[in-house]
Image 1 (tube, rainbow, N blue to C red):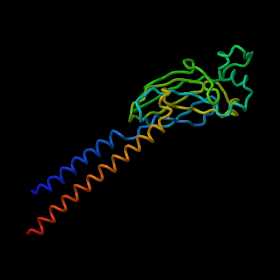
Image 2 (cartoon, helix red, strand yellow; image 1 turned 90 degrees about the vertical axis):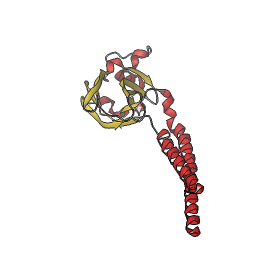
Image 3 (cartoon, helix red, strand yellow; image 1 turned 30 degrees about the vertical axis):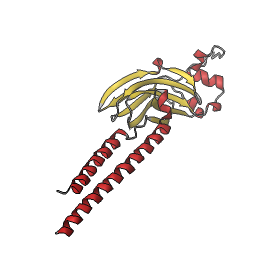
Image 4 (spheres, rainbow, N blue to C red; image 1 turned 45 degrees about the vertical axis):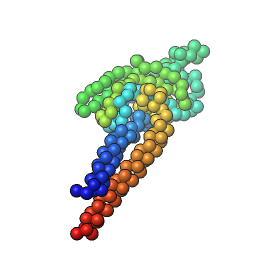
Amino acid sequence: MPRTAITGIAIIAIASVGLAVSEHLLKPRYALYLSRPISMSAGRVSTGEFGVDVSESYRFAIEFKKPTAIPSDTLDCLVGLAQWEPQVHCGETHSVVKVNWTIYSGGGVVGRGSSKEGNGYWSRGPTVTIGGFHGEEGHRYSLDVDILTDGSQLAPAEPQLVIQVANLEYYDFPHFYNLFGFFRLLVRVGTGSLILVGAALLISSFARKHNSN
């Protein structure tokens, strides 16, 4: 086989392997962020199945997207944040955020817990953490939340059930993967160009052989 043809085949093979490896290594993996409205009326709420792209610790929380709909002191008392705020006196107003949760994967239970193990803080609004789990890349999960106490009076504050990665460094993942995507594009262009060069060498070699005959 002519040296030109061998060179072309080698270039195509090396570029193809490089492209395959880069597609795997640079595959976008986004930390899960799931948010959906939740009724705080007593009963069960199910998320349905969701996937995890990043092996990390995730947390479940109930966030209140419209905190100004309820007087702030009353809201803090109703969601249990007042225990960390000595200046707020709740009197007979007690927290109504009392839940149990169960998370499943592959048809089995992988974790259980309750809001008793959680904590509260202010973000864009009051947020109550109710639990968490360690998610494995490529696995599918579903979450059931059993609301034990009627909290329908919280509806004006627009409660949301949120599942998100617990590690703060992942909150900027979209920006990180914009850069990752740029490198992925460069590799695609580079390996694609090499494959075209290799193909051109092969075609040239066969054309010369044909002409010589």
